[in-house]
Image (cartoon, rainbow, N blue to C red; front, side):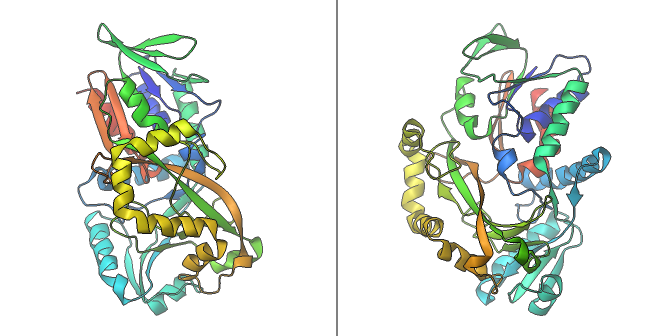
Length: 392
């Protein structure tokens, strides 16, 4: 059995396979020279409690199960897992109805310890935050996801599996009920294959015979970081009430397990699938993004928001002004640039942003076509779900 991709999700799936099938040969194929090289190694490090997701959706059910499994795993392996808590802040009365909806969803999803706060109650938890109301999720945590991914890789090897770095899958073909995965230099044969290729997931899925859509449109998420002298402005996690039209959560404040507080991310179109810097441009990949009909329909529908995001990306004071709506004491001098990430956002042909996890089955191949946040939080539960699909 094989898995394409050594991010946290691919490694979690491989780990589940070696547990489910002791003695089976399980191989993870990764084009980079290390695990967690892309989305897993560039995310905000938040273990989500399950506040936002539509009750009954895969995101809701797998996040709630996954966060419990992740907490236990980190405790068992001695990995950092800090329940610093999170507040979702309504800045004014116009956001109260949306906050009510988040509270309803969180309650339906069984999020523990959730508490509604007044503006005064908010300041008891986050003294420097401003808002008319908030939801407090005390069990939302921060974690070191690259460390978790490395531990998963160790588990795969300990279970008799293999993690092959430098193996870029460029072709897939069926052969007598099996799947042949080819790099530029060699071929490997599997009876079952799971595609967890993140930013390349649609491309690899198409190699397996899957449909063109949804296509991955890469969005770069840029961050600033509080200078150490101003870390006291934030105790835990401060989030906005998200715009329900988008699967992005908006600019927020995130304390990191290694120290420091990040502010972000925004969401701007990346000019390469792995375009972590503004100067990272791959014309062929950009053209591929732009000629996907869903991308053009998305741009026509949301161009005003896109321009606002671009302005915040180009102008530091605009980015900081957005964040200052939640922490009024914040000044431009309080922040410095921090590393960016790229989100693999699936977009359907009609231009809609795919919100829920999307997992498909093509005979002996399972394709994970959309697994953005909270996929890292949910990875152990997604792995259970994927292996169940593989057995159908």
